[in-house]
Amino acid sequence: MFATIISGFWCAIISLQITYFGNNVATTKTATKATTTTSAAKSKATIAAVTAKKKDDLPKVFSLSEDQAILEQLSLLYTKGLIEVCNDDTDVAFTKWNSMMLALEQYADKQNVNIKGVKMWIKVYWATDGTVEHIGYSLKPNSRNVKIAEFNALLKTFLEGYKLQQTGDAKFTNSGSVSFPIFTGR
Image (tube, rainbow, N blue to C red; front, side, top):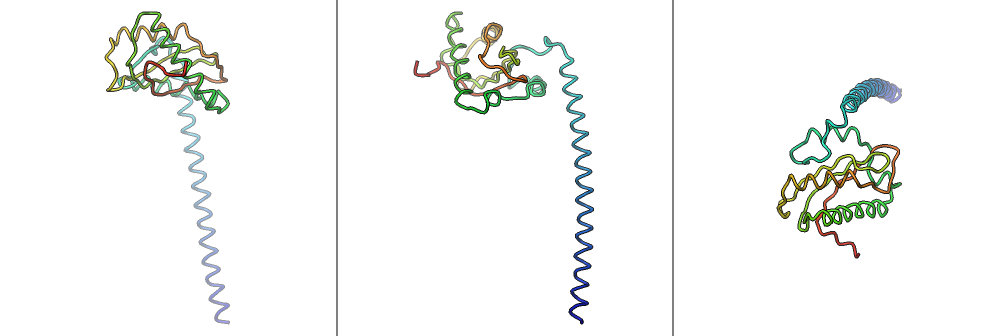
């Protein structure tokens, strides 16, 4: 009988703990849901504010290392990655990315701008139809020196005339590291 009373006592304590813990979980879930809803509302408001800005307010070409605010604004507008709009096919995405870098190199050659030896991190932002809207870049420490104004002008005129052969249901982006010349087994 004593064992029954003890086991009943422990069952009651365990039952109370479970109920109490259950209430905490419910409260935590409710608080998390409210926080998530508030965060989502703030994100939507931020996106709306960035979208409300004129397109011309954000530069077509910018430095990744110097213009962090631009990078943050664009990350709110360009919600998908190149791989995602290529149906998660990394081979297709790589081929498209590589063809764009090769096109940039060929464009530079036609403009008589020598970019051989240029090494950089680059982030490209596309509209849903594949047109390039923005390019951010940062030259690597071991890159060949270039005249920044001339290089920016090259990138700006390139993006105005280049269109990726890929579309998406949302604006998309990709970043990578590139070294010129591009070796693709041409």
